Length: 304
Image (tube, rainbow, N blue to C red; front, side, top):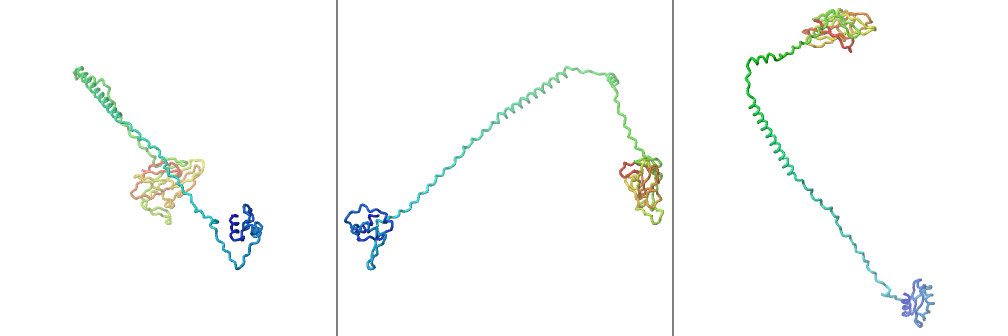
Protein backbone atom coordinates (compact mmCIF):
# COMPACT_ATOMS: atom_id res chain seq x y z
CA UNK A 1 0.00 0.00 0.00
CA UNK A 2 2.85 2.40 0.82
CA UNK A 3 4.54 1.62 -2.51
CA UNK A 4 1.33 2.62 -4.30
CA UNK A 5 1.35 5.89 -2.36
CA UNK A 6 4.94 6.66 -3.47
CA UNK A 7 4.10 5.78 -7.05
CA UNK A 8 1.24 8.23 -6.90
CA UNK A 9 3.60 11.00 -5.77
CA UNK A 10 6.02 10.20 -8.61
CA UNK A 11 3.19 10.38 -11.11
CA UNK A 12 1.47 13.64 -10.10
CA UNK A 13 4.34 15.33 -8.22
CA UNK A 14 2.28 15.97 -5.09
CA UNK A 15 1.37 14.04 -2.04
CA UNK A 16 -2.37 13.55 -1.75
CA UNK A 17 -4.31 13.43 1.47
CA UNK A 18 -3.90 10.13 3.20
CA UNK A 19 -5.31 8.74 6.35
CA UNK A 20 -3.54 9.21 9.61
CA UNK A 21 -2.51 5.61 9.67
CA UNK A 22 0.01 6.30 6.83
CA UNK A 23 2.39 7.87 9.38
CA UNK A 24 2.89 4.48 10.89
CA UNK A 25 4.42 3.10 7.66
CA UNK A 26 8.21 3.00 7.39
CA UNK A 27 9.78 4.58 4.33
CA UNK A 28 12.06 1.87 3.11
CA UNK A 29 13.18 0.57 -0.19
CA UNK A 30 12.47 3.94 -1.99
CA UNK A 31 15.15 4.71 -4.66
CA UNK A 32 16.95 8.00 -4.45
CA UNK A 33 16.32 10.58 -7.15
CA UNK A 34 12.64 9.73 -7.36
CA UNK A 35 9.96 12.37 -7.23
CA UNK A 36 9.23 11.21 -3.74
CA UNK A 37 12.56 12.54 -2.60
CA UNK A 38 12.20 15.72 -4.75
CA UNK A 39 8.87 16.36 -3.07
CA UNK A 40 10.53 16.40 0.29
CA UNK A 41 10.71 12.72 1.08
CA UNK A 42 9.54 11.44 4.34
CA UNK A 43 9.47 14.87 5.96
CA UNK A 44 7.08 16.16 3.36
CA UNK A 45 4.98 13.08 3.80
CA UNK A 46 4.86 13.59 7.52
CA UNK A 47 3.87 17.24 7.13
CA UNK A 48 1.19 16.29 4.66
CA UNK A 49 -0.26 13.82 7.09
CA UNK A 50 -0.46 16.40 9.84
CA UNK A 51 -1.42 19.31 7.49
CA UNK A 52 -3.46 18.25 4.49
CA UNK A 53 -2.54 19.80 1.14
CA UNK A 54 -4.76 22.68 0.13
CA UNK A 55 -5.45 22.80 -3.60
CA UNK A 56 -6.29 26.09 -5.40
CA UNK A 57 -9.87 26.49 -6.38
CA UNK A 58 -8.82 26.73 -10.05
CA UNK A 59 -7.25 23.35 -9.97
CA UNK A 60 -9.20 20.19 -10.02
CA UNK A 61 -7.87 16.97 -8.89
CA UNK A 62 -9.26 13.82 -10.26
CA UNK A 63 -8.61 10.69 -8.36
CA UNK A 64 -9.10 7.49 -10.17
CA UNK A 65 -9.72 4.31 -8.35
CA UNK A 66 -6.95 1.92 -8.92
CA UNK A 67 -8.40 -1.38 -9.92
CA UNK A 68 -5.62 -3.03 -8.04
CA UNK A 69 -6.78 -1.39 -4.76
CA UNK A 70 -10.22 -2.91 -4.96
CA UNK A 71 -10.48 -6.50 -4.20
CA UNK A 72 -13.37 -8.44 -5.66
CA UNK A 73 -15.70 -9.78 -3.03
CA UNK A 74 -15.77 -13.46 -2.97
CA UNK A 75 -19.26 -14.88 -3.33
CA UNK A 76 -20.63 -16.61 -0.24
CA UNK A 77 -20.41 -20.25 -0.60
CA UNK A 78 -22.88 -21.97 1.66
CA UNK A 79 -21.97 -25.31 2.99
CA UNK A 80 -24.05 -28.04 1.42
CA UNK A 81 -26.48 -29.68 3.84
CA UNK A 82 -25.46 -33.18 4.42
CA UNK A 83 -28.49 -35.19 5.46
CA UNK A 84 -28.04 -38.43 7.21
CA UNK A 85 -29.24 -41.39 5.16
CA UNK A 86 -32.32 -43.13 6.61
CA UNK A 87 -31.42 -46.32 8.28
CA UNK A 88 -34.45 -48.58 8.80
CA UNK A 89 -34.73 -50.22 12.19
CA UNK A 90 -34.18 -53.95 12.05
CA UNK A 91 -37.25 -56.01 12.90
CA UNK A 92 -36.93 -59.01 15.17
CA UNK A 93 -36.93 -62.26 13.29
CA UNK A 94 -40.31 -63.93 13.05
CA UNK A 95 -40.78 -66.83 15.39
CA UNK A 96 -41.47 -70.08 13.63
CA UNK A 97 -44.99 -71.41 14.36
CA UNK A 98 -45.16 -73.94 17.13
CA UNK A 99 -45.60 -77.44 15.95
CA UNK A 100 -48.95 -78.91 16.78
CA UNK A 101 -48.86 -82.17 18.59
CA UNK A 102 -50.42 -84.99 16.75
CA UNK A 103 -53.63 -86.16 18.40
CA UNK A 104 -54.39 -89.14 16.19
CA UNK A 105 -52.17 -91.56 18.17
CA UNK A 106 -54.13 -90.77 21.34
CA UNK A 107 -57.47 -91.17 19.53
CA UNK A 108 -56.40 -94.48 18.05
CA UNK A 109 -55.23 -95.66 21.46
CA UNK A 110 -58.55 -94.71 23.09
CA UNK A 111 -60.54 -96.55 20.42
CA UNK A 112 -58.38 -99.64 20.87
CA UNK A 113 -58.90 -99.51 24.65
CA UNK A 114 -62.69 -99.30 24.23
CA UNK A 115 -62.61 -102.28 21.86
CA UNK A 116 -60.61 -104.36 24.35
CA UNK A 117 -62.90 -103.44 27.25
CA UNK A 118 -66.02 -104.22 25.20
CA UNK A 119 -64.61 -107.58 24.15
CA UNK A 120 -63.77 -108.47 27.75
CA UNK A 121 -67.24 -107.46 28.94
CA UNK A 122 -68.92 -109.50 26.20
CA UNK A 123 -66.80 -112.51 27.00
CA UNK A 124 -67.66 -112.20 30.70
CA UNK A 125 -71.38 -112.13 29.96
CA UNK A 126 -71.09 -115.20 27.75
CA UNK A 127 -69.16 -117.00 30.50
CA UNK A 128 -71.85 -116.12 33.05
CA UNK A 129 -74.60 -117.34 30.72
CA UNK A 130 -72.72 -120.60 30.16
CA UNK A 131 -72.21 -121.08 33.90
CA UNK A 132 -75.89 -120.41 34.65
CA UNK A 133 -76.96 -122.87 31.98
CA UNK A 134 -74.64 -125.57 33.32
CA UNK A 135 -75.84 -125.02 36.88
CA UNK A 136 -79.49 -125.24 35.85
CA UNK A 137 -78.73 -128.46 33.96
CA UNK A 138 -77.01 -130.03 37.00
CA UNK A 139 -79.90 -129.26 39.41
CA UNK A 140 -82.72 -131.72 39.00
CA UNK A 141 -86.31 -130.60 39.66
CA UNK A 142 -87.65 -131.64 43.04
CA UNK A 143 -91.32 -132.38 43.59
CA UNK A 144 -92.68 -131.01 46.94
CA UNK A 145 -95.85 -132.49 48.31
CA UNK A 146 -98.64 -130.13 49.39
CA UNK A 147 -98.43 -131.50 52.93
CA UNK A 148 -94.80 -130.43 53.16
CA UNK A 149 -95.68 -126.93 51.97
CA UNK A 150 -98.36 -126.66 54.62
CA UNK A 151 -95.90 -127.80 57.29
CA UNK A 152 -93.37 -125.15 56.22
CA UNK A 153 -96.04 -122.45 56.31
CA UNK A 154 -97.10 -123.53 59.79
CA UNK A 155 -93.51 -123.43 61.06
CA UNK A 156 -92.92 -119.89 59.69
CA UNK A 157 -93.47 -117.07 62.22
CA UNK A 158 -96.70 -115.15 61.84
CA UNK A 159 -96.48 -111.54 60.63
CA UNK A 160 -97.59 -109.12 63.35
CA UNK A 161 -99.37 -106.06 62.00
CA UNK A 162 -98.86 -102.82 63.97
CA UNK A 163 -101.83 -101.77 66.01
CA UNK A 164 -103.54 -98.56 64.81
CA UNK A 165 -102.47 -95.47 66.69
CA UNK A 166 -105.33 -93.93 68.54
CA UNK A 167 -105.75 -90.20 67.90
CA UNK A 168 -104.66 -87.94 70.70
CA UNK A 169 -107.56 -86.88 72.82
CA UNK A 170 -108.67 -83.34 72.31
CA UNK A 171 -107.78 -80.91 75.04
CA UNK A 172 -110.77 -80.30 77.22
CA UNK A 173 -110.99 -76.67 78.20
CA UNK A 174 -112.31 -75.64 81.58
CA UNK A 175 -115.84 -74.28 81.41
CA UNK A 176 -118.09 -71.95 83.35
CA UNK A 177 -117.39 -71.87 87.10
CA UNK A 178 -113.89 -73.39 86.76
CA UNK A 179 -111.06 -71.26 88.17
CA UNK A 180 -108.14 -70.59 85.81
CA UNK A 181 -105.00 -68.58 86.33
CA UNK A 182 -102.83 -66.33 84.19
CA UNK A 183 -100.05 -64.30 85.73
CA UNK A 184 -101.14 -62.71 89.03
CA UNK A 185 -104.89 -63.15 88.52
CA UNK A 186 -107.33 -66.01 89.02
CA UNK A 187 -110.40 -65.91 86.74
CA UNK A 188 -113.79 -67.59 87.16
CA UNK A 189 -116.32 -67.12 84.31
CA UNK A 190 -119.81 -67.10 85.84
CA UNK A 191 -122.15 -66.29 82.93
CA UNK A 192 -122.66 -65.44 79.21
CA UNK A 193 -125.48 -63.34 77.66
CA UNK A 194 -126.00 -63.23 73.87
CA UNK A 195 -128.38 -61.59 71.37
CA UNK A 196 -128.46 -58.12 72.99
CA UNK A 197 -129.21 -55.28 70.58
CA UNK A 198 -128.42 -52.55 73.14
CA UNK A 199 -127.03 -52.32 76.65
CA UNK A 200 -126.83 -49.69 79.39
CA UNK A 201 -128.69 -48.97 82.59
CA UNK A 202 -128.42 -45.23 82.08
CA UNK A 203 -130.40 -43.95 79.07
CA UNK A 204 -127.67 -41.39 78.38
CA UNK A 205 -124.99 -44.10 78.29
CA UNK A 206 -126.83 -46.72 76.27
CA UNK A 207 -125.04 -48.25 73.25
CA UNK A 208 -126.56 -49.84 70.14
CA UNK A 209 -124.88 -52.98 68.71
CA UNK A 210 -123.73 -53.24 65.12
CA UNK A 211 -124.77 -56.92 65.26
CA UNK A 212 -125.40 -58.31 68.71
CA UNK A 213 -123.85 -57.69 72.09
CA UNK A 214 -122.39 -60.64 74.01
CA UNK A 215 -121.66 -59.99 77.70
CA UNK A 216 -119.34 -62.29 79.67
CA UNK A 217 -119.39 -61.94 83.47
CA UNK A 218 -116.43 -63.11 85.62
CA UNK A 219 -114.80 -62.66 88.99
CA UNK A 220 -111.10 -61.80 89.15
CA UNK A 221 -108.91 -62.16 92.24
CA UNK A 222 -105.36 -60.87 92.75
CA UNK A 223 -103.27 -63.87 93.91
CA UNK A 224 -99.97 -61.96 94.11
CA UNK A 225 -98.39 -59.95 96.90
CA UNK A 226 -98.60 -56.58 95.19
CA UNK A 227 -101.21 -54.45 93.43
CA UNK A 228 -101.98 -55.29 89.84
CA UNK A 229 -103.86 -53.43 87.12
CA UNK A 230 -106.82 -55.12 85.36
CA UNK A 231 -108.54 -54.15 82.09
CA UNK A 232 -111.37 -55.79 80.06
CA UNK A 233 -109.63 -54.72 76.84
CA UNK A 234 -106.99 -57.49 77.37
CA UNK A 235 -109.60 -60.28 77.11
CA UNK A 236 -110.26 -61.89 73.67
CA UNK A 237 -113.32 -63.77 72.31
CA UNK A 238 -113.38 -66.59 69.66
CA UNK A 239 -116.51 -67.85 67.92
CA UNK A 240 -117.22 -71.32 66.52
CA UNK A 241 -115.61 -70.34 63.19
CA UNK A 242 -112.33 -69.43 64.91
CA UNK A 243 -112.75 -65.70 64.40
CA UNK A 244 -111.21 -63.38 66.99
CA UNK A 245 -113.07 -60.44 68.60
CA UNK A 246 -111.92 -57.65 70.94
CA UNK A 247 -113.96 -56.08 73.71
CA UNK A 248 -116.11 -52.94 73.30
CA UNK A 249 -115.04 -50.88 76.33
CA UNK A 250 -117.19 -47.88 75.38
CA UNK A 251 -120.32 -50.04 75.57
CA UNK A 252 -119.18 -51.52 78.90
CA UNK A 253 -119.22 -48.11 80.57
CA UNK A 254 -123.01 -48.25 80.84
CA UNK A 255 -122.99 -51.58 82.72
CA UNK A 256 -122.98 -52.20 86.46
CA UNK A 257 -119.39 -53.52 86.81
CA UNK A 258 -116.42 -53.00 89.10
CA UNK A 259 -113.97 -52.58 86.19
CA UNK A 260 -115.32 -50.82 83.09
CA UNK A 261 -112.07 -49.58 81.52
CA UNK A 262 -109.15 -50.18 83.93
CA UNK A 263 -108.73 -50.59 87.67
CA UNK A 264 -106.04 -51.64 90.10
CA UNK A 265 -106.74 -54.66 92.31
CA UNK A 266 -104.86 -55.02 95.60
CA UNK A 267 -103.41 -58.37 96.74
CA UNK A 268 -106.08 -60.84 97.90
CA UNK A 269 -109.01 -58.70 96.65
CA UNK A 270 -111.57 -59.89 94.09
CA UNK A 271 -113.70 -57.85 91.68
CA UNK A 272 -116.61 -58.53 89.32
CA UNK A 273 -115.93 -57.58 85.71
CA UNK A 274 -118.29 -57.62 82.73
CA UNK A 275 -116.72 -57.74 79.26
CA UNK A 276 -118.83 -56.71 76.23
CA UNK A 277 -118.28 -57.93 72.64
CA UNK A 278 -120.07 -56.66 69.50
CA UNK A 279 -120.39 -59.74 67.25
CA UNK A 280 -122.41 -60.63 64.14
CA UNK A 281 -125.97 -61.83 64.73
CA UNK A 282 -125.20 -65.36 63.48
CA UNK A 283 -121.93 -65.65 65.45
CA UNK A 284 -121.82 -68.13 68.37
CA UNK A 285 -119.28 -67.48 71.14
CA UNK A 286 -117.12 -70.56 71.70
CA UNK A 287 -114.11 -69.61 73.87
CA UNK A 288 -112.73 -66.65 75.78
CA UNK A 289 -108.99 -66.10 76.33
CA UNK A 290 -108.22 -64.41 79.65
CA UNK A 291 -105.04 -62.40 80.19
CA UNK A 292 -103.20 -60.98 83.16
CA UNK A 293 -101.95 -58.24 80.83
CA UNK A 294 -101.63 -57.60 77.15
CA UNK A 295 -98.17 -59.29 77.18
CA UNK A 296 -99.14 -62.51 79.03
CA UNK A 297 -99.68 -65.92 77.43
CA UNK A 298 -103.33 -66.17 78.44
CA UNK A 299 -105.60 -69.10 79.30
CA UNK A 300 -108.79 -70.25 77.55
CA UNK A 301 -112.24 -71.09 78.94
CA UNK A 302 -115.02 -72.82 76.98
CA UNK A 303 -118.33 -70.93 76.85
CA UNK A 304 -120.53 -73.77 75.49
